[in-house]
Image 1 (cartoon, rainbow, N blue to C red):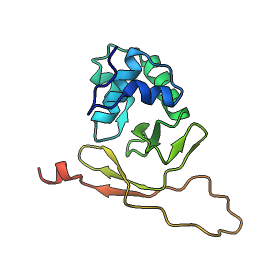
Image 2: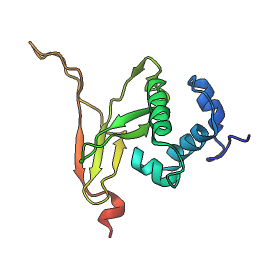
Image 3: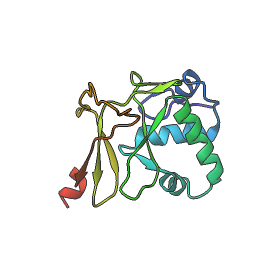
Image 4: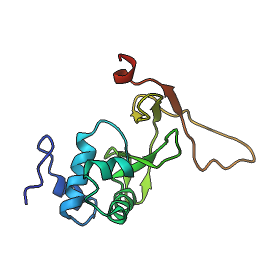
Length: 147
């Protein structure tokens, strides 16, 4: 099976490097993440595959991708779970290190990673243990703004 599908990326090697078993569906799903310039929800994925894939298979693949540092969860206005690709230098199977903000579009409800917007360093907050810090901007993406 040829797993070089998006811009000559070797999707099979990406899965193997992350320790993720290569299946036809997972190869196509990773390619979909790479070809999409936005975060994806389970519904987006099911729609893309014309509901031909079992929802449980989608969830299992997403959990495997996240646990192995390939994707990360991103915020959504409707409290749906959305996922975006991790950058190689940010994540590994043992930790996700996302030091960037996110942008949520009011019109299309897409969530975009803002790689250039870094979280401020929190030096000391006496009496508090920060487990998660979120920086989210909201408005209209460039596609929706020009319409």
